[in-house]
Amino acid sequence: MSGLPVRALSIHADYRCRNSGACCSSGWDIPVEPDVERRLDSAVADGALGVRAPWSRPLAGLPHQARVVLRVSAAGECVFYEAGKPRLCAVHRQLGPEALPSCCRQFPRVATLTPRGVSVTLSHYCPTAAGMLFRDDAAIEVVTDAPAFPASWPYEGLDAREALPPFARPGVLMSWAAHERFEEQAVATLARGGRSPEAALASLAAAAERLRAWTLRDGPFDAFAERVIEAVTEQPAVREPSLEDALADWERAAASVPAGVARPRSPRSGVERFDVARAKALVDDAWPALQAPVRRWLAARAFASWLALQGEGVRTTVAGLRVALGVLRAEAARGCAEGAGRPLDAALLKEAIRRSDLLLHHLVDVEAFARDLSRCEGD
Image 1 (tube, rainbow, N blue to C red):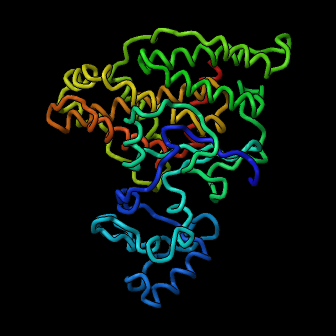
Image 2 (cartoon, one colour; image 1 turned 120 degrees about the horizontal axis):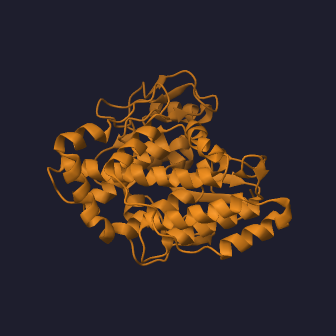
Image 3 (tube, rainbow, N blue to C red; image 1 turned 135 degrees about the horizontal axis):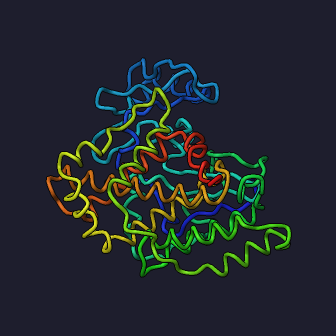
């Protein structure tokens, strides 16, 4: 990727690890690549990491020829996690980031690699990344070569460098340049203040429908796409969202969690025990005051999206954002219900965002989710 730009969002541009420890204590199976395994074996044997063998356990079917994963405690903490203050990783502290397994080194970065460069968003399951959605010191836009994302970083993610560009609709490819332009417009539409996330998605959906209607009579696709994007107009939200719809969106996303991966408990049972109407009111009453971080979160999901590359058109991309917003509403209602009637506030929203990205970024099989959502392209 030498010489190609690295694109990111302005609100993420100064990201750095704050040692929250969430990634080290979530009980994940972290594959250890063979060269990393050898280095850690040597460091453990030398006593450099303060951990006794065995520090790993074998697991079949791992990527990159890995044979083992890091051991975790009953509480979900990695064997190398130093749970004091600050919360640190012994490997990172003693040997440096280059000695980490790839998953640890990349988190919370979510990258797409294309012929035009690298695009990086963040998983807001990371508490530090989630907190950045609530900042008001930076307008949200796409930036290049941000300090937090140097070109020298060994980015891994969805590698589409030798793939065809995404679909505008089934059978009609966009160009990579048009894809980036639509992505930038999605960020700009969601970033614009003064309207609800639902209305922003309605505007984006209207633009997507015009874009996917291209035919040869409209001339070169890129020029047509630019005209469509420049003409994006504000659209009202289609209708008042219901909590039942949001819970259905959560279940739809969770249905793409692959077998063998622990699926989180549905928010439905807790919300229904508490009272659906009350839970909805606790979310809806606070929603207007919390729209800015919600829109920023949706923009972060629209940018560097694997779903946009694996789906069958721009309608699928918008459908994925609408389902994501439903997942967030369902998780917000879960937080209010589990808080015994506590109204939605910034702290509850932050945790709802974290749970939403845990599901959508880390548990869902994005390829299977894209296939499911792409059914909308035939409507």
